[in-house]
Image (cartoon, rainbow, N blue to C red; front, side, top):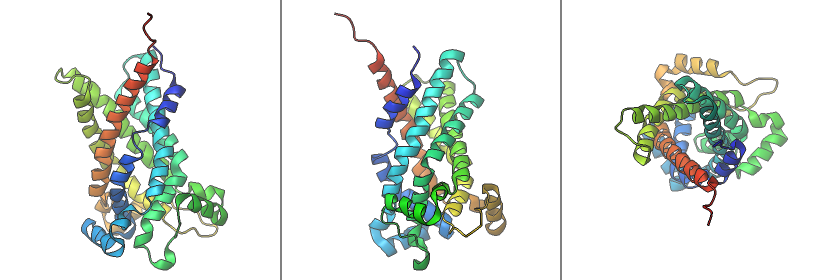
Amino acid sequence: MIIEPFSLIKFQNYCDPDSGIGQTVTHPLDVIKVRMQIAKTPLVGTVRDTWRTAGLRGFYAGWSAGFLRQLTYSTTRLGIYTSSVDFCQEYFGRINYATMIGLGLFSGMVGAFVGTPTELMLVRMTADLKLPPDQRWNYKNPISGLYSIYKTEGLFALWKGAVPTMIRAGIANGTQLGTYTKAKIVLIDTGVFEDGLILQFSAGMVSGLVMCAVSIPADVAKSRIQNQKSKSNSKPPGLLKVMLNIAKDEGIFALWRGFIPYYTRSGPHAMITMVCVDQFQRLYLELLKPLPSE
């Protein structure tokens, strides 16, 4: 049976497991990660300063932007990837690891382009607490923030950092989604695992670790770019240039600053997301089956 790609995307847009509860639970880790990357502070110091400055509320700064980001970025990337994998397997049989990574990279870049304005809001709203008062953005909510950027910086400023965001998302999704699909195949081939929750959790753990280790340098550079104040007649620096400057000025390991909150948030998040995607897809396929004739 051929899966109708656009129907599957629509279904996952309504049932996206990556938003809502998942974003609420993991958002404090997003806040800590971004503030570590922007302020160049260690984990313990970032947590302590956030608590002293704003208490529990400080760990949920920018939550609305994070939620809105999931509604745009995650639904797009997951819908495109699962549909394209099903399409390729239907017509070409078992696809190789490189193809899986390529499909994940493409879906991640498309999703990142769609979600860049909300990603921009997330970075700026979570970084505010660590900035001097005169340098803060002070957005009331992501919608008013998007409108403020449009009025003061122009329409295209909403996609500031789009290229590094797309590159980071392509790397993250290519490794996460491609590795998840490949890990499931390898684990099944061992004869130890059968298709089910245990297999999905095991493959999700592997893909989450690989994804975080590979993508965080681009994530650090992306956060720096998106938090910079715009200057007239100036273009934001390129992703590679920012990464090289960070490595030169702060040391190579600064590119992995915030890895603990990044993995603590993204690793289990990626695992749970992929398990939910598989379960929702299975439910969707069950709904497609014709009812038995009486």
